[in-house]
Image (cartoon, rainbow, N blue to C red; front, side):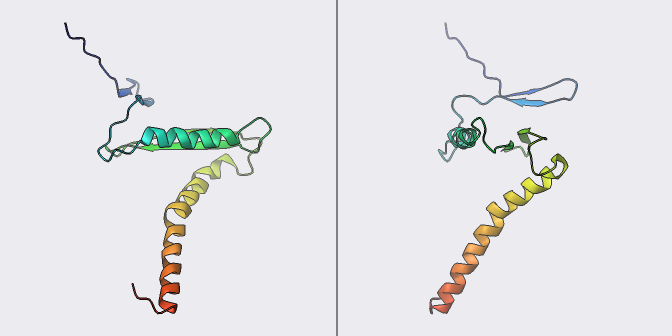
Length: 122
């Protein structure tokens, strides 16, 4: 007799509340990248910064899915944070914009300017 193992990947609450996603041990993806390992590695690095008495006052985790949905997890210490909670979404958006777009674009422009100044064409 063959035993089938059912995997639940997503659960929606009837009342329209939280959208729960289950991360299984192996996350299949066509490029062979280990997204679960990268997620856990990043979370581990931040959690090590959060030792007792540290300056870590919060964190955000955002997961993006192929169907266009996203899942957000965060923790925030209102008393110790230098930024009010109401300003955090804009602050996080600016951090992501800086790290994903502004800094890489500025690096590319700087390399192009230096190359041009040294007589190299792209």
